[in-house]
Image (cartoon, rainbow, N blue to C red; front, side):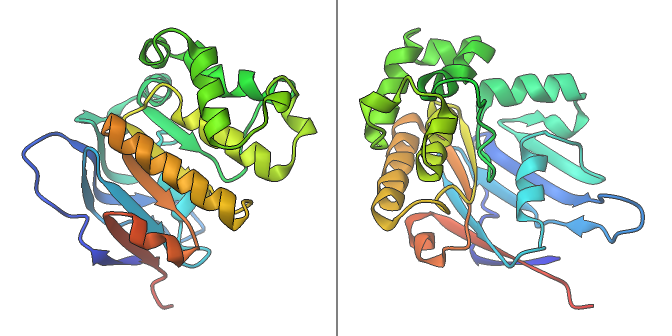
Length: 238
């Protein structure tokens, strides 16, 4: 895989980078070729749009940045912390405190209500809870309202809601507690155009207010103009 940068994400900065990646690769098993990823440097508060065809490793790249597994080679520095040198437990703690992840498959807890799913990061991280003013339920309700989830749905189990509603609940969960980094994997794929635009507006407005950096993966190239930078991942010809 190689990359084509359409608006450079390799930018020098005089402050600590939100995301800095160098010489990164990952191999699912020894019988498959390694996935390689572009070097990048993203300042705190800047937003990057990542796109490319299926099979180029976009979701794998986000999983590496989230610390879900270590890279085969290379370095990942988030907020000045070398997460590639950490053990699994420390990576999990760092993610809980500093990263909001919107998973492609949502990863909601099926037996919890919509509101309880949104407040879950505040139960796992004292830092995220403190960022809500210690009233995580009220913060969750503001996000659910902004994402057009009716109040009548807040106490329902997420399995009783539509796919589009579940996707917006997953987004609210990632946003609560103002994490410094948001990693979003196809977060608008199940949304109609109105809810897609509402979500993008909310995501980037909250990011501006909190100086949060956003790495946003999508096949929808029409969204790219909303972001400071964009990178395309491409397969290396066989």
